[in-house]
Structure formats: structure tokens, C-alpha cells
Length: 201
Image (cartoon, rainbow, N blue to C red; front, side, top):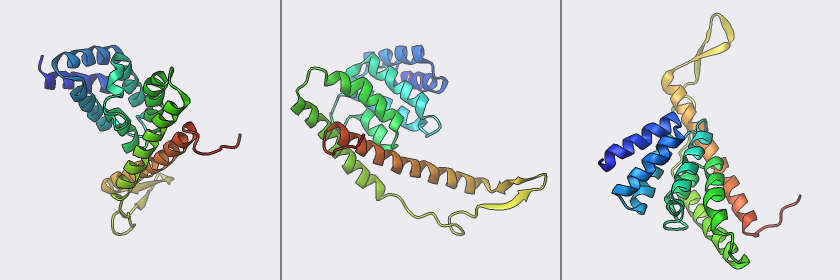
């Protein structure tokens, strides 16, 4: 089977949250391409399906991928494709999955210095990505970018009518806001894991 056909199968399995099908499709993919290409392609599919609403199920899909071939999560460390998906979306769910499934097993037999260096590398990359990605955000101004509600639903005063384009813009703003908060929380967690700051209990 061709790579593109397998990727379509992977995508379908992700949409259906088909754990067994996804694991089998990842194995098929690894038979027709190398690990680095597979890691990049699988990361693109995870990123494409991610929203805050789907964070939990997307993290489950990431878990299945990493468990099928743990090395996919460590290639090009610290700039691994799977880790980048977590940071790009500011997803705590994806980040925690990556840490639990890839980093913690990797660090089991490591020294304190090696553990510190590992988390410091992840922290440094996260800060760089956060700075680069944050510069892409622009103001969203009511009256220019969206109009918000234009009427009340006559049968229920609590229901507002809103233009579909405005709704899409507001959904996008919420996703970006969640991304910003998520990255902030990821940075704090990496600081803590690296022992860079003291936290009060």
C-alpha cells in the first residue's frame, strides 16, 4: 500500500478514535517510510485534528503512536515533531502525554544532571517557539473584524443570533487564547521539572 493511502487510513482512525486501527496503520506506515518521515506526517495529522474540545482524544491518539514506536517521540530531540504539536497548540493534554509516554521513560536511568539538561532543552525550545508564534497574533476588534450578536431570538431572550462568520472568528480567538494560556502553563511546568524555580506547596 502507498504511503498516501496509509496516511488516509491513519486520518480515518483518528477521526473515529479507533485505537487498534491506528496502531496497525502506524505499523503499516513504518514499513513504507522511515521513522523521521513517519513522525513528521503523524504529527501533521494530530495537529490538523486538534482543537481544545478534542484535546483529550487527540492526546490518546498521540499516546498510541508513541507506544507503537517510542523512538518517534525522541527523534530530533528537543525539536521533536510530536513535542512541537503540543507547543504549537499550547495543549496541556498533548504535553502531558508527551512527557509521560516519551520523556519520563527516557529519563528513568539518567542522572540528575541529565534530567536537568533534558528539561532545560525542552524549556528553551518552548520559550523560542512561544516567542515566535506569539508575534503572529493580531488584534481582533469588534466592529471591524466581527460584529457580535445582531438580534435576540424572539422565543428566548437568553439566545442571541450571530452571523456565522463572526462565530467562526470568535471560536478562533478562543482557541488562540487557550493556546497562549497553555504555553504559559507548559513553561511553568518545565521550569518546575528542571528545578529552575521554587514552588510553594
